[in-house]
Amino acid sequence: MVNDTNEIINFQQIAKNIKPNPGEIPSVQGLDIYGETISLLGDVCGDHIIYVDFAKRFNLDERISQADYSGKTWVRDKLKELKNKSGILLSDVSGHSITDSLLNAMLHQAFLVGASYELSNYGEITVDLFETINQRFYDSSSIEKYITMIYGEINNNGDFRFISAGHPLPLIFSNEYNKIVKIDNLNLVNYPPIGTLPSESDIDGKVGGGILGYKKRYSINTLNVMGQGDILVLYTDGFSEQRNGELNYTIDRLEKQLISTKHLSSAEIFHGIKDDFRVYCPEPDDDATLILIKKH
Image (cartoon, rainbow, N blue to C red; front, side):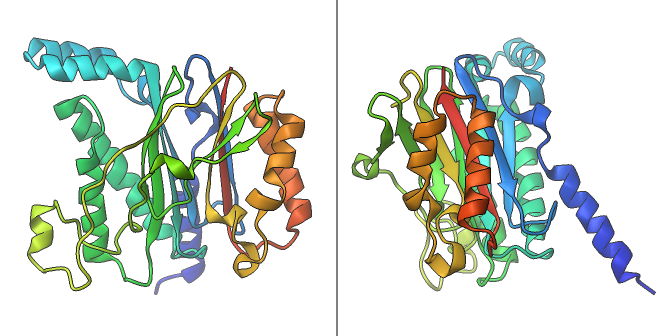
C-alpha cells in the first residue's frame, strides 16, 4: 500500500534538490546577480530558477580541447565565448500546488540534458533546444497546464540576449535617470507559453497537426542598456498579478524601492524588495520570483 505522506515528502525532497543554491548564482565580471523565489509552499512551488554559470557547471576547458582535437573549430570558438557569459532560466507554471511543480522538475531535467548536448555539438545553447522542449510539453501536458518561461544569457559587457515564452518581459532601472525605463518600443518578441502550441519548425510536430495552429520559430531578443549602476530585473507575474490582478507591485512600489536601494548589492536590494513586498501584499496568492542583474 502506498503511503501518501511519504510520497509527498519524497516529492518535496526532489523539489528541494533542484532549487538553486547560493553557489549556483553566476559570477560574471562586472555584474552582480542575485535572485530568489518567495514561495507559498516552501520548496514546492510553481516558479523555478535555473542558473547556468557555464564556467562552473561545465568543464569548458576540456570541452574546448575536445572540440579542437576533433577539428570542430566553430564549436571551440563558441565555447570560448561562454567564459564571458552566464545563462538564467526563469519559469512559472500555471499554478502553485505540489503537482504543478512536477512540470518544473520536468523542464529542469530536459533543459540541462539538452544544454549539455548542445554545448558538445554547437558550443552554445540554441533555440532548437527550446523548440524541442515546447513540442515535448505540447505532446505530454494538459492544455490547462502551461509554463511561461524566459531564458537569457548575460555577457560581461551588459548584453542580454533572451527568448520569452509568454513571460513578463524584463524591466530596466536606469541609474542615470533614476527610474524604470520603458522598453516596449524595442520590438521585443514574446511567444506563447511553453506547451500551448506545437512548434512550426519541429519536424515531429507536424505528425499530429496543430488544431489551433503552430508556434513560429523562436527569435532572440537583445537588450544592451546596461550602464554603470543600471539594474536588469527579471520576475514572474507573482509580482504583478496578486489577488487576480488587483495588486501590481511592479507598478505600485518597485521603482520607489529601487531608487532607495540602488547603491546596495543585488542581494541587499532583493531583500529590501522582499520585505517591502510582504508589507504590500501580506497574504499573497501566488509564488513570486525576482532576479536582479546590476552593472558595477
